[in-house]
Image 1 (tube, rainbow, N blue to C red):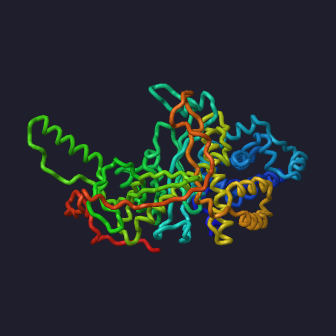
Image 2: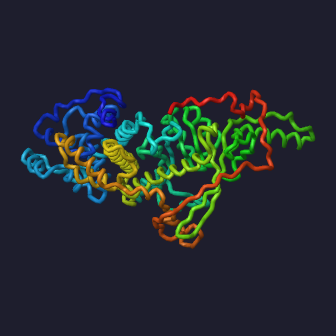
Length: 523
């Protein structure tokens, strides 16, 4: 299924003509064999040429360093993280190709020429390539990828450190505390990820001055009505919630314990309740009118319902036992799935644990691909170029894993990302003629190196890796270790102090009962 979607011409980019005449020359035929090897099955030369044409980076004459070769070179830099630029361009060619190219007068370029090649290509072709690979594709309803008939997805953010140069510090300012810049420069990245296959459905970047909820608005076009979106507590708010619901996606987001206020309006038999997520602007307007009338000595304004949207709230106590030590924490979840018969509270709490697959995907990007190092680019353009290229390589490896899992009907999370990365690295010199045969062998080999199922019951505590101050504080923790853990979930019943009520619908307040609510998604 994935092969058909990726190889379909014109599936994501508009059709633009390119000039392939230079690739038919003796030098062009040898240069055309340089690419990503096995991953060129996911990022074919035709798609690269199309992205270059749309971005206006295609060439009217055949250069010694074509733009297509430059795109594959930047992608190879992200795959071969420990190699230098000169070593990377040589690793892209087989041992037979380089001597033949030298006979024809083509030699591996110097680092200066490679830098100018990267500057000539820019960032836009890589953004177009990522958008083409991240297009939503129909997926089968599997237990590891769907719940309640919806594809389970999550979004989360992270920070990536660029190279410490004056240009990067000016373009990507670091954190500011009390008006003073502290710590290294950072690029904020927000990704939308499918929890089943862990492939990326979208990504946006921005400076640290833009928070994750602000960047999330740029990912709203990626949402659709067959999706159940999980999110952490920093995202819950009326504007973003309503904007996501307008896209048709169902939501399961964590809320802070005290904000926003979600009183019980209708108790449900599974311990959850219906409440109203109020519009903060309307609530502030009402409070301002009450305060103004009180200051002027007038009577309070006429009571009216505050604008809002009906949500369902689930509270649960989660107890984690690690090495005989238990820790209990209260979780409050807010969802748009209002029917407790279709989505019981216990299943919603258990489902929310899949949000950590977004953290796992981010960890694979920063630890496995970036090797916990800053980006190489010394200018903002090269830094952003490398960041988008890293996301493309991650997506290509994830699509390779999904293809291998599909051949054996396996959960993609059981295939090691590191093993797939190593397989792609070792096969970087695979020619296009041998790609199909080698792809079949790699898929079979990855299915033999499966991760045991019990890894889902491990815990990996957070820790602050780098601090911006030398003074000790409680956030400093020892180096985390992976440990087996057991979990117990207890759904908290509805508070007895607030009797369940059913409010009368008004033009300003939607209904809170379930008499006119119907499930429209098909399993």
